[in-house]
Image (cartoon, rainbow over all chains, first blue to last red; front, side, top):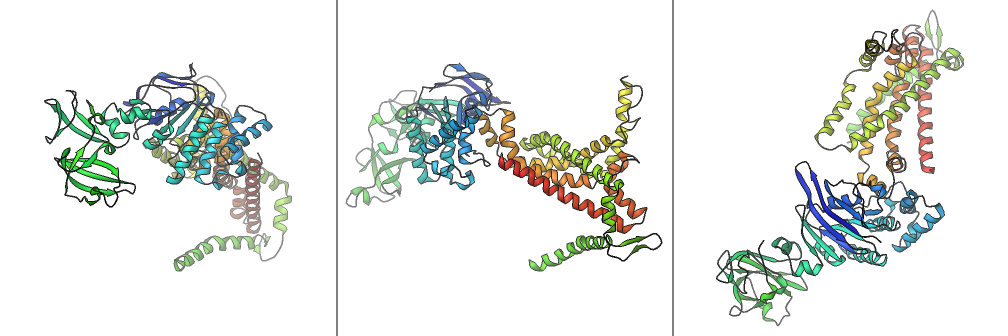
Length: 345
Length: 276
């Protein structure tokens, strides 16, 4: 297994900057997710690693070797396409063996290896089928097998779960992660789905507007977001705008929030599940506006002054006072001021 | 729906089928220099068309020119078709229209254009002479090569458009996947793009082959008086010799050979790719 390093990578299309001075390292055997809204430059980055897009500046290093100017077919990367991109005129076995054939492996050997790779994704019994005869999930697994049979230096996944239905997604998610860890594949995954990124990765890189906004572990991004954008994008967050006056944070509508504040802070961010709902005489008083029953959890929207704040709690039992709350009732919000993050931008 | 389809279908049948059947019937009649066509039922016209070395040679020339033109057209069209299919943005529709543009001008006019290009004081010879590369004009016009050249030029748009529409339906990611798996451009073409675009190649070359087999103006104008192909020969029988039965027999011979060769060609190519 090899490491992957992007050094000051930049990509311009005319006047538009798709990727701006990006740096990132994936250690051997790690899975790093490139996360961000559509158009943030994550797919362009992936395509630069695969060699389909030439960077305007910067370099791509695989195991310390500069491959920036190598064509795709001379890089030992394996890309699993969002659309799977299986060869429709080849059988499953031929699809999986294609890369080995390009590497001039003798027929007997490549047939054995392909079958082994198919066994890993539990599709060896469908080796003679054609892609069109398979379900979406099975095609996805063929695409995975076609990549991992090559024992690639870098495994690239482009939105691997986006074409699967919700139930299958969880299954394939753990399957991919299992394979990646078992084979110790250095993997770069592109996704816009934060849940996918949080659950599957060793590290995350959050991109927006062609730039890296924050990188780190899932906990880093969730617990310690660098800015309001990260706080809002990763998980759900109440991002309350305002400024610091007389040592405390005051929202735009004038409501003061507890906790000592950095003088420069402009955003007060708070995770919905960190807030407790109490009676109005305890905590910050507000008015309940909406109650959304989500099954295991219930989501409450509370107006603090004129600002809506989302609170998520475990759904209360029938005897709980919370169960009697109706929109319009006065409530109090309480939270540990350590759970609040005050951010400058 | 059926009420509308039925009369339309009958009309098409009448317009296409009846003349064909009439012609088929004529081809079994006999010819009399005095009375022209006489009611009969004879295979004599077909026998003559097949046995007479003069017509054998015409048929052979026709098949050879059509095959050469089809092959050359396919080779020449693939690159532009690929380029057009993979192009994006506003240039794509403009270039597609530009490709169709020659079809607005009839084959006769375009053949005349090729005459102007190839004749002894035409553009090519004049240019070469102007550059001092030759002193005596090259004999370009009235050669089999000129016929193939002009035929290719005339049928090229059909081939490009047919191929482009099929290549467009092949996802680009499939090509990317081949490159990602280690296939060099040439290998990716032979192993992935070519087999996937085969339906387009078959459709295009069938269409073009039929057009070439039935070419009339091009062989007449660019081949010169000594050069003979089937369509002009059929015309000669009808218009000059007034031998309708023999003309009809030649026409059906041309039809049968065209159908047989296109069927054979398609199945051979399709089978070869299935096996490989």
